[in-house]
Length: 155
Image (cartoon, rainbow, N blue to C red):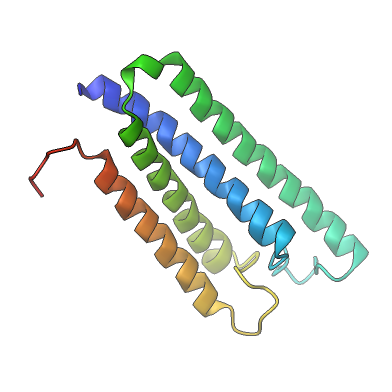
């Protein structure tokens, strides 16, 4: 597949992976399991007060708006070039995007800024945070493998 086709698959896949990975994070970890919200590790916004929950809900909503925009961009890119992209490459780049989202989220929000952790309801969240980062790295690796053309044997 020519390089221009790979660019379309890469762009669409990464946007879709970031958006869908973010949706999964927000829906499952923020809403269903309620392990954390966007700002729960910030001392001023605890999830067990009405004011804290209101602030966290607003920021969770802004986060979901960002992930929706990422999915919309990925779909638009696919729609514009649908006949030029490989499904395998798009799926691979989606995994790279999802894993990249997890790595950035895990390093920036969980470790550097400390705005929340995977499990804010535990006293020692580092193990969960490290597992989240490891899962992100595995997604990037699996996705990268899928983006390689079939039959390619070089390493």
